[in-house]
Image (cartoon, rainbow, N blue to C red):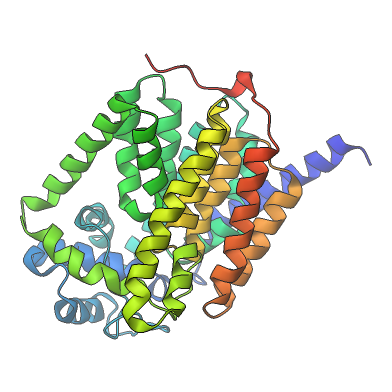
Length: 372
């Protein structure tokens, strides 16, 4: 059988998987309560009723039980619940969905995330045909994002829009504001822009960040200080983290936070250095920064591997075995206890970064226009 036929069959199969992802949230099999949606719905509920206690875990515990109709999650998070610990603007994004009710709102929230992911991948892979985004959209990381009702689709949309608008740096920076839904995953992008002195893009990103901060500061001016206290609780030795800094949680209790912080800074610097090695190829450099953001994050779960899939799509030269290895790593990370997810995912991400940095050549036809 010719390579063209194999490629055609693979495209049909991936299209079928992509359609299944879209249909799944509409079926009774999908249980939105046993996902991360109750946490976002709790944040949305408090944004409407009690913004001054958005990060009060005792208040969250009461509200989350109301959101779920008394149902408790299969897996407890922190304080006996899956708490809302995202930036406050995420709660505002979730408000329209929470107003639909927990069940319907959660299903629409998942579909919204998938739509954002698809649009972000399409923007990031242009001018290649839409089929180029299929391996990233129809992979295991997308399934994990969907099952966990996570926000990574909005992050990918921000990255894809920034790539599409790269010839207009300030607008590209504004688009990157969407990545602040999960700011811990985009630290190398921010540092990379500073190192490359892309000041207009940095300015646009800063404006977006200030606007997002102000959107909730209207209701609670102290929300940032209230947020900083509990976010450290997300880094736990027992959580299924896929980032390298998580390995520092194996240190004695008094040294864990310092180990995580040190590894995070060191990995951000290392990722930006690797991207600098491919500064002659915009897509390779961008792929390194995006995938490296997951590797260097202080908090990254298996669902966040969808950003690594997006990075491979941005690169545009991934082989079938790259997608296979990433999918296998995502499956293992999702079903094994800590620290196995990190021990599996970290080497895979390092290997993919090596692939991008040392086994690619510039592809001028796929470079975005130079910033004006």
